[in-house]
Image: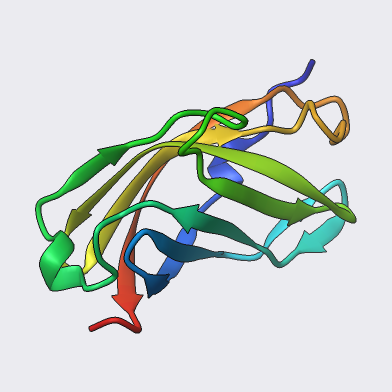
Length: 131
């Protein structure tokens, strides 16, 4: 397995939405070139069990999550080269209008060009439709 060029995964901004106990987080990424094609994608996370979608309420809080298929996992994906690839999220932390995300891009599931699963850490500005 080849190492995925994780330096290509650069966050632009994130949007937190939903309701307490069932939130969603979309992390918009900078466009990048992969294998001669332009990739315009985001990391989409659904079913996040957090107590609020208000950034003021989440400030200073951190959360750990199990990996799919364990109960409490976050349903995550990234769309690259005509396939949705799973994204396992291990940790989310909130610092005002910034969210930090730790996880794994799971490329081995759909077989993205023989790339290995790739850990990542992102810190990105976040907005919320829950104030």
